[in-house]
Image (cartoon, rainbow, N blue to C red; front, side, top):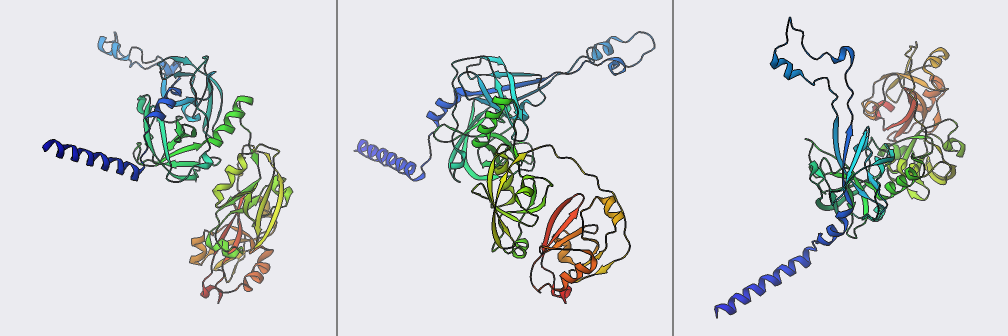
Length: 468
């Protein structure tokens, strides 16, 4: 009888566990690890130190007479070169020995060692590296190696299971798993990468390792974490496979990466900007400025336009635009759809080549005269001498003081040059006052402002007291 009860209880527990597994749908990663792990490598880098010479080599204190033995032993070798060591992860993408990792893992390295899962080690050649995408391509002299294939990061959905393999803190072949938290995340240091955010545990040394989907395909390269103390706190970011694949192709062919350039400076479309620009909701990328002679200018795009799509891909926020443009090589022809003060327009652009930006210097100057106005701003004229000193564009008035709380919170500051109000060019103080006197109460206003060599838009709703 007891045996029957025991069997009954055992059967019930097994059935309950099976039912729980079916309900939760928790995956088993063992087969995936067996297939993928052999292609994941550990990367160790060395940056050679420089031997100190001349006066810099004097690290031993001066003594009268013979140096005491304990001091001699302590300082012995202090002027020898000190090498710097680093480590990360990577993965093989071809059986012939091509390896992908992060740019920041190998940046500045004099020697790169790739250690395979079976403990074999190779000195790697750097084929090429790209800081903007944080991707580097290495080559080792080996053959018949296991390798990983790329999947489609664009197909990832929030809540989907993903897995990482790497060498956190030099613990090789460490496996962690989690879900996709979000896609298309932006990070200021790498504006051309729409990062995959996940809750997969990533730590120092995981950089450059693969993020895998449940089919064992690489959907991302683990790049960075958001942390308060240097360790994982639940926010990990990976470079999407589409970016990696494009970068690797160019690095392999030319050793460098070339990106298309539209030639616009863009900013956020806030609720106030959307209202002032005739949109029913905040969306797109607000064109603050258009570079002279750029692809955008040649196509007819103007400051104040709101870019809604690029090459048939929607631009929901301003952060979406740089990766879409940068994913295309120079010479690419694309259609750009904009909203121009509520009217939809389309432009054909041919992308330029991205070049390093040059810094512009702003010269200080003063101007007499001033005027108050209904926007809560005091403005004054801009003389030709001052305009030359500032290298400012034609037209506009200078903000001498900001008296409106709404204008100040929107970002307007003394010294700004107001060039346009609601798409109307500002020509001097009288022209400025004529425009603002015709503004409607309770309506948002968009100001195109020049500041320190760049233009941007500020939008806010003036208070009824300001408009009178």
